[in-house]
Image 1 (spheres, rainbow, N blue to C red):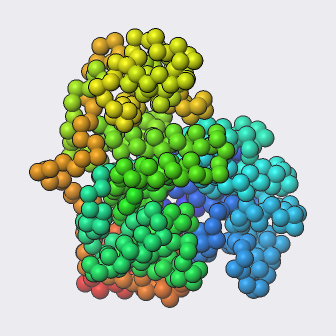
Image 2 (image 1 turned 90 degrees about the horizontal axis):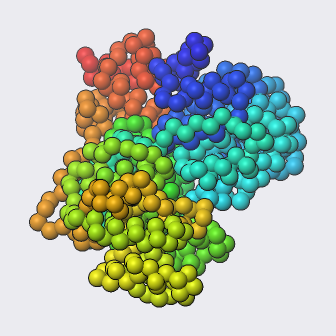
Image 3 (image 1 turned 45 degrees about the vertical axis):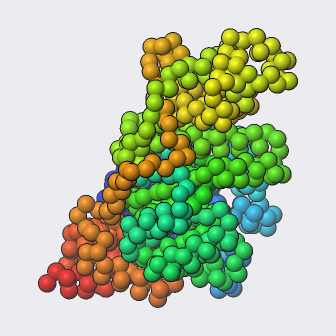
Length: 600
């Protein structure tokens, strides 16, 4: 890997691979197909970019949005790599440049949408263009089980065949077992090398709060991050405008973003967010997938997201540079009702609706978790974790009671019905509601029928979500959402272990001030450090002048490393994280001037 490490340092400016990257790069360069599930911020783009540089041939990258293609190409160009994208905004000169570079074998990476790749003329042209690798980004969009299924992604299996069954790498940050199986079946004709690195983002502080005063709660979060960028997701278009106006009235640089805005206004606000520091974007979920800004320091949800996968994807836009970042999700009963109504009113097939219901239930379980949120979140994706110490429940604690008896009633109902039924059937048994289904299966005769009349159906639903969050049961999405008791659940059922559950769901605690230490960008450099601020100001000027996102110049992590090391020579600057040879030549003199000014 000696030569690869030289490329890693000289081109990308990185001293070493991140965890998981080396294994995947090796697999790609040895000719294997790969499915990589890695958390956001783990450096998935490098997995196909580095092999594209290290060997001959063209790498075609499937990307969902023009904005993302544009930014990736801008970044690669500044690294000295020949790259382009096939999209409707290309002018005649750009089309000619791409065609010539592909024809002459200079083009290393070519980005395109799945729709564009499925065109007969495009596929035929690429089939003659020495394509050696097809890289499918956001691969969960391929799957009907994926949280963001896009039918056009289903075309990629035939595209791969038309390119001669070309070697393929599929990448995603969110794919459970069912989604991974669907991706493999849809895209590959042989079993790929599968790497599931994990879903944990330890640099993200996780917090969820019942809604009290939404604007005040959001404002408090934003004010903990002066001069830093963040995203606040709103449920409606009107909500983005109202929140942006409210934050602006408080003296903050806040902008709205939603799909109903004129395209030029959306593009302008997005460019400001990408090029400048300290901008808060109040947005619908239309904003995000194409945003690769690494220094987003906070992400908030002013209303409950639509599913646990959507939540994970959206908070994943914070802290992509690996530095600490904060997340906050506000929720209430109205949000839960709205999300359920949206599922029922959609045109999705019944099977898809069933899956979406279960995903929403998993998110509500996370909201109501009685212990570490990270344990609950990672448990949903099949991972075990210790208490994280970096979520609101670990930091603040929570009001609990001995819920062993309630848990045993739930577990008994699940076991006595053969672990074959979902939430409503179990709840109806406990409250003694003799529905048609209960009568048909004879479950009114069970010892557990009616033993839970002391709680309402809503309370039992909450308690069931809590024992799910604590790992006493698991949910099988592929078989109608049936509940299955885990080994720990068996111990609780037998009285071998006690369990504590939350008693304060949906009720804000009174008389207790939450401890909310603000995550710092780094342990050594404060956000208002004069040198760090000067470096960011220079980056902003260069980004505006070149019309590119600020991170395309240098990421926050690079500027932090500069401010810590304070290099004053080209050789010393070359050792800073993220400063490759091309960027050193292009931007080195300007940044050295600032560094020398603050070091002298």
